[in-house]
Image (cartoon, rainbow, N blue to C red):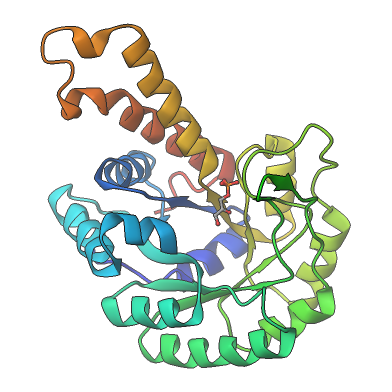
Length: 288
Ligand code: 13P
């Protein structure tokens, strides 16, 4: 199946009260692992690259070709959207030209008016090319220079103005943060989420920082309008743990256990298993 825009996928999720997982990829193994997990769960899926991961992989064209060609060679039949995660304005435009089917323009660090103006420009170029757009209001907390910020709460009035630019889905802080959650984290703010969902009138909402949020909070967030959940750190953690176990058990020293195809297999399998587990949490299994 050809890559698809995320617009319909997330609108269906919003109506059906489930969420689509957006998993960050870093390389060939992760891309295969995510596609396999989605296919085996018969679930729509979003594969996303951060700007840094895309650079690491050799650029946006490489990422696009990799995902598109793996969909063909692996016989993937579930809907897959290739999405840019936290993109600068120029990167969003480049991804649209290259063939990404969805982009996030993250202008949350800009003055709000400028964030809005640039969002409108991205929407106009993206929609002319059948590409869906995510934008962010406020900023999602997380670890920066070793300091873990508390999750920010977005201003619902700003959410409404951003939603009205014509974006397809909205990321807004509701106390969520990227990376691991600190011991003293107070949880998601469902009052804020409800206010944002009411004022944006059915626009699919995005929950960043999906790693480490307990199942009951994830499901409550979905019931209130979250339709896309980003997961990155947890995939990294299970990949590293499985690889560590393989090496600590000395398996790389047995026979040809050092062959990367063997060395990276347990980590890759762990990512597939996590993707399948999260897809079940989010309720998108069987929704392809
Ligand atoms: P985590 O790394 O906390 O899962 O967050 C991922 C994310 O939100 C990417 O934009």
